[in-house]
Image 1: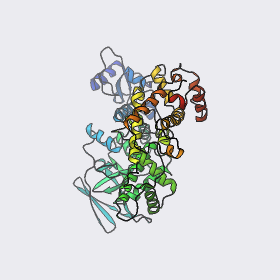
Image 2: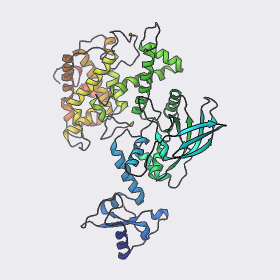
Image 3: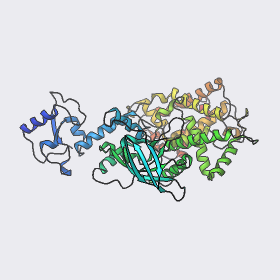
Image 4: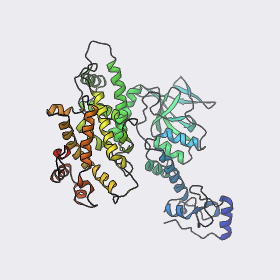
Amino acid sequence: MAIILQRQISNDEKNIILERFGRTCYATGHEILENEEIHFDHIKAFADDGASEIDNIAPMCQSHNLQKGRLPLEDFRIKLRLEDFFKNGQSLTLKHELQHFKNKGIINTFAEIVYHNISDGQIELEFLNKKEKFRLYSCPITKWQYFYATLPVEVINSDDDEDGQIGLQPRYLIQDKIFDLYRHFQKNTVLNPSIGRLYKNKILIFDGQHKIASLLWGERKEFELKIYINPEPKSLNQTNISAHDKFAQTRFFSSIMVAKLGSQFGKQFEEYKNIEDDEKKTEAGFAKYIKNSEQLSNADVNKRFTSFIYDSILDESTNKIVRLVSKSNRSSSEYPITMDMLSKSIFSNFIYRQPTEDDLTSEYYKRDKEITNSIKLCNIIDEEILHKWDSTKTENDLTQNKLNRMFRSKSIMAWSELLRDAIAAKLEITDQDEKALIFYREISDENFEKIRKVVRRLITWNVWETTVNSEIDRILADNKSEVKKFFKDKGLTTGYLLGASE
């Protein structure tokens, strides 16, 4: 419910407020029509010592005043503006917010050039026609130099991937986290600085972007920073990934980990292939090379390797299902598929996830073919059914209910195994070792039409279309073994996918 004024303002006071604001809703600035009721509410909440005086009262439309609940009016206003910003997509960083603020005229510029000079244990920065000096410190382990400074928004940017270089920014912005921090910092101090690096005359932030992002919504224009001076990017990137993946309370989103590790691994893979020696170049050889050179565990090498393959498959320009893959670790009505779901279903069944011994320069090396084939399978699934996904529809819509059932996590894990076995049969692959390499080969267009027919059989299984709250809905909440047993009992088998009756 809306917050009630401590005292009722008079009609004369209401008129003064309307003269000041016009018939304009304070929440978004839209016009309140003549036939709409005007509500009057605190800009600064009464609970936060906001006075019930006309200087602290603004008009609102009835709809927004009811929506805001117990939020102070200014906080609700920011919440709506945040929602507007996040309509730009899932993959947003501090750089996108800075550009958004510039487009709105809230800030004049950002990412301005910063020149520096080091002498006598100090660093002198020159920016925006002024100079400032800061004391230098040195990391006892890496010997990297760094300094602490409070710098204006005009010289700050996010450490994103750019110009073919791997950025160090490991996260996308999270809407709820920004809003919670925005409210927190209205009453509390910032305990730790954000962290960045001075690189090519730019201040690039790679840790603590949510702090800066939230403070910007609170109209802060200067920020406390710890800045490294030209550190070794590869080492700092790995340190940053470990800090966020292994030791942070808020873990990486799986999709970001895939993109970061996959991108880094891909560049190192190219470097390895171009080493001029007499050694045969293989994936297994590269895995050993990177393990020894960076002192990684087998698990870390495998994580990078699979991330590289997954990132290659999830190419937005070629893979149609990417638009429905969540950037977070949770699915939603708008983004029903997660990286965890893909890795335990389609990827685990159709991708060979161990480094091969095939010579990278020989005709036997088929990793590129495997990636292309996996993308084709994803696109067939999209073309045959998934393109009908509509987040605005409820379970009462038969098609949406069918899709919800098919793409529940345990469901897709179970039917992916059946799909693999059926496709292997269509491709006449019977050897178990060969089945593990099912897409690691050339597959003709003719055979992909056979694969499409198998997918169509999966989609037309009649149990998907049973009424809401049928037995299947209870079973799909169970473990994968129970789901597989249910599928088999109800006729969803490899034989059915190959054309047998249910």
